[in-house]
Length: 126
Length: 112
Image (tube, each protein chain N blue to C red):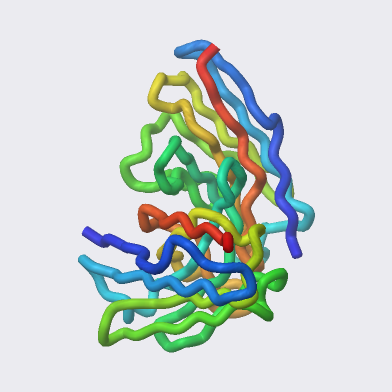
């Protein structure tokens, strides 16, 4: 069965770059039917979608974070990654990697999330 | 951007009774070309990632008990738990995927 596992530092200093990787097992990352995404949840708060990437490398980004977000995918390693630059305390959150089902509106895009990683807490603090 | 709201913020329901959660989108999420509402519901229990319950506003994900049902169209949607069980205590989120995905703020469901 499909599993997603986040990895990366749990503590990042303010103004630095947060880097996380998600490793996919039990399934293909190169399927045309899915986007691979990042969603975060500040402690005690709700969910915020960060962005999603297709196996080809095309991306969708949350406009509020777009200037600070870089995503990449490595199909040979079955991994996709997130970089969030210039972090502040407001970026402290549990970060989830996720699989979206592809849906079509004007074109293909990330739809509902049918698989989630367990999440990793990233704290921004000096 | 489409903004999602939910009501109530929290509710407490007796075991076996009905729980109803409302979700409203700031714009229409019904795609006319396929007559589908681009709306999903998730359940999140403490310390766990969210779990997909319903997509296309009313289609239950595989394995989800049939006491969970979704309804609505356009901008107004409802998640109903027909007979609340102890294991249903959780926070429930709606999400639109008509445009860049966005979640509602969540509704906490407890036992009365």
